[in-house]
Length: 268
Image 1 (cartoon, rainbow, N blue to C red):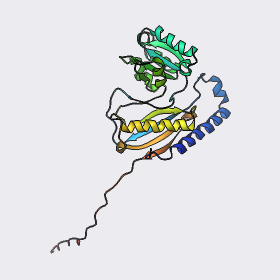
Image 2 (cartoon, helix red, strand yellow; image 1 turned 60 degrees about the vertical axis):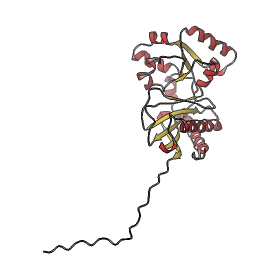
Image 3 (spheres, rainbow, N blue to C red; image 1 turned 135 degrees about the vertical axis):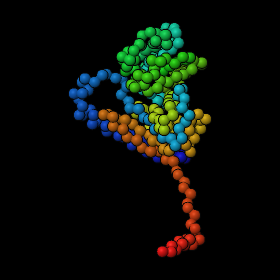
Image 4 (cartoon, rainbow, N blue to C red; image 1 turned 180 degrees about the vertical axis):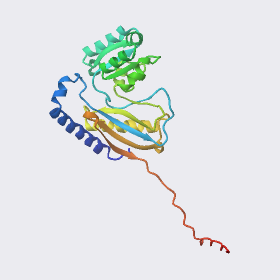
């Protein structure tokens, strides 16, 4: 898109930053790594930050936009309608057929068992930290366990409709960008990860921004202050590079040709 500037160069610089940061961390934090929790997700998220002049109308339901390539990596937890055994069998069958996304699903749990087993803030924290990403599949009532305390440790889960082919919906979920709508003047959205190629990340960014500015529920370009692409490395070091900035136009003050009025004389 013409209004995005140097997107490929910005992403390339971010990937270089992450690679250099990983080398430094590996060389200096060997002791910390011994006691760190084992995680399968070794990729770093690539995010897009949007700052608004006029924010989209606040709503409890976030916006979901599908992009060409995966936005998440690592383990998945699938939350389904009851009974969960039906969906466990589907995931197992896909995994046996070699489906890469299904192989990353570590747990399938239905909404009823989630409400019974995950009770209280301690259980919610443990559940949130057990998997890298969460997918809500076809639930009409959104689980309250995925709000509040959960969002302190994980981003908003992806919700996908139950209609259509199960495998296609599962693949759609991992290619979905989630945009929260809380009335904030800025939002951060995951659009990819460092496991993708440079071109794939750029394609995701372009597709997401184009859909967002053209969506009736999103924000038109005139309401966006700036767009940045960013990554967070180790030790919470974040780098963000701008790829769009709003252009302000100020009306020039017309010069007056009349002579300034003389001040009246004051008689003493």
